Amino acid sequence: MATGAVWIIVTRRRHEREKEERIEALQKMVDEYKSSPAAQEAEIKYSSALRGVMLKQLGIIKMVAETPTEQNREMLRKISSIDGDTNGELVDWVKVFELIDSLYSGFYSNLHNRYGDILTLREEQIIVLMVARFSTKEISVITGQTISTIYVRKTSIRKKLGVPEKEDIVVFLRNKADS
Image 1 (cartoon, rainbow, N blue to C red):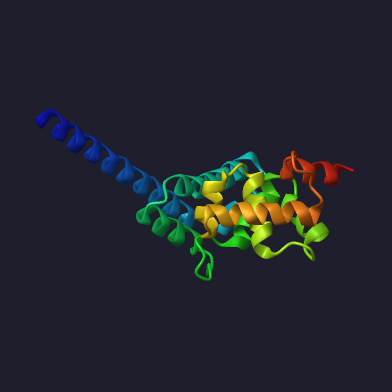
Image 2 (tube, rainbow, N blue to C red):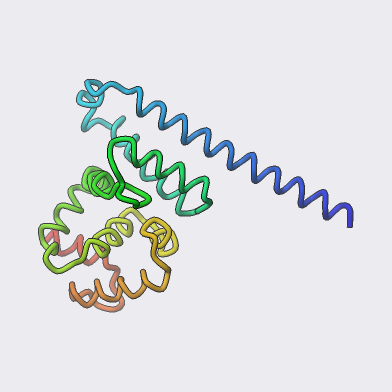
């Protein structure tokens, strides 16, 4: 009995340390982002270094979605609101769309230009998170919707775009963009 209690305490302490380490890492990234001069950002705009930073930003969003504790959500809100207002959202969608465009060859712009009059903003958000390989659960955390709502929206996306039942939505859209 005592061994079980000790194991629980040790496990909880380890989880707390891991949470604190994640928060420290996120705070360090925020501090580095705040201190980087705009001139340096302009110089490396399309370099591999910038791509790495963008992938890290997307990774931070994904990490919060994987472990949606209130501490992680609050840190993501802080990070997202550095350059502007998130309008109560967990992320700044304008920035996320820019990240997706930069990392995935203009995917969001192509999507919006081609289907912006058919898809809702929430549907576009779901698709860009899908292209970045977010799971349905992670998408639900980031968009603030239930998992079942995400499934309903994916079905709606399929119908609106004419995506066959067995075909991946992102693959379908990429094939359409190539043709």
